[in-house]
Amino acid sequence: MASPRRSARKKLRIVGAELLAAGGQATRKLTESLKAHPRWGALAGLFLATGLVTGVTTGSPGDPESGSESRVQLPVNPATPQEQSLSVASQPPGEESSQDAPATNAQGLALSNGAVEPVAEVGEPAWSEVEVRPGQTMEKIFRSLGLGPGLLHEVVHLDEHTRTLVDIRPGDRFAFDIDPEQGFQALRAEFDDERWLFIERSGDELNSRFESRAMDRRVVEANGTISSSLFNAAKAAGLSDNMTMRLATIFGWDIDFALDIRAGDRFALVYEEIWRDGEFLRDGPILAARFVNRGEPFEAIRFDAGNGPDYFGPDGRPMRKAFLRAPLNFSYVTSNFNPRRFHPVTRRIAPHNGTDYGAPVGTPIWATGDGRVIESAYNNLNGNYVFIQHGNNIVTKYLHLSRRDVGRGDRVRQGQTIGRLGGTGRVTGPHLHYEFLLHGVHRNPRTVDLPPADPLPDEYRERFMQISNPLLARLEAADPSGLMLAQRPEEGCGGATRSC
Image 1 (tube, rainbow, N blue to C red):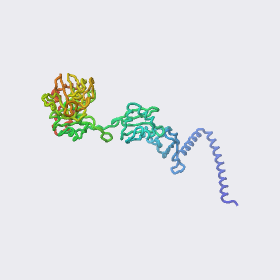
Image 2: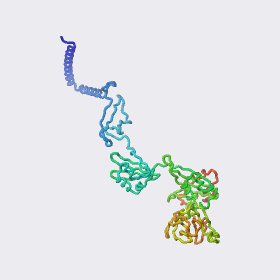
Image 3: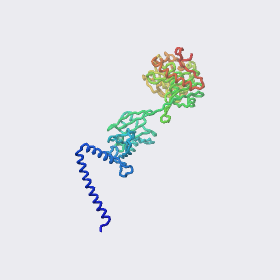
Image 4: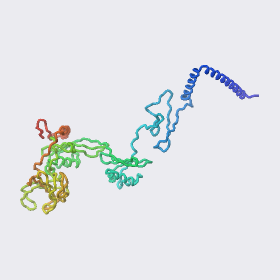
């Protein structure tokens, strides 16, 4: 007796045979019809292809067989040691892919028409920063980074700028770009406050270049009144010693800061501060300054007339004159020019034909004007001495030096150090004896009329006024007492330096 399962299988085979027979008969009839009507055949083929494509590319959202992700194997990235795969998510039915957000892999690559393209430009190198510690040398730093002495020799001898890399100090900072496979790529060093020095590898060669550093220049004002000394007043106003010296240098042709300064003298200045990354680095140049000495105001504006920045009065005349009033800075006068002075050694009345400046031994002594050294020697009376011949039949003399830095026949420039203050020769103590002779006649160095300087050429006048007027206004605003008077030329005054 046959089981129910066997009976069911027998029935299924019979039904399948009947279906195949019916299908074959239908196929023969369809083929005959298509042969009789060719146009119908082409249309049926189009419908059939459309159905097949639709069935492959779409699927029911709930159908587990519908593909939600496909994996595409990319070629090996030269920058990576192993192959990377890119997962491209299929778009939901009826939605178009976004053109603004291409699919990317971990390396930032995008598929575009089958090609791999970078999404963004290559970024900055991976810098490794090194701060110099006490006792470290550049050779030790290179060795700690796995870089050989041959590379250091090549870097240091690349050009005159890279030679400075061997002179390092604790706290200096360097940055290295070292590729794990290709080795040294670049070195970055602080060349100065305003520039980076880069040494970069290009193929088998090294090249150096400079790159500007972002600097913040802030314009500030300061002012003060002298009660005891210029240094103390400047310090109270927040100025550094270096800035104080620069202020005195600007007015050094008109004011003898060793003798002429009095209590109640005032100053004001507008200058730059240099900042970087929110940190103060140093003082910048003085843009404008005013000094009131014994009630007489002097003003100076920084301006470039084609030969580099220099200082000019409000009337356009240079502050720089043919001679400085004093051959040294910030000392005190022990004996003035006096044609009937009582000599402390000989105990007799004798003319003192110069000015004696007291200062510490070794203080630099400057040439007060351009000229040629006509004497540089020693004797028992003058000690070490230097005589300089200038133009316009002027000779200046510098006596009792501890040493001489120039020789006979040397050309010297104004402000150049020609020796050091001392106590050689017939003296009671260390000092400088300074003389000023015009046509062979001694004159008082502090009061003699100095040759005037030529004013700015006419082609610079308009630009100078555009720069000087705002700075002079800031000087006035920086002095709350209102005691300073501007020396600004007014219209209708014929270029006078005082208000009229």
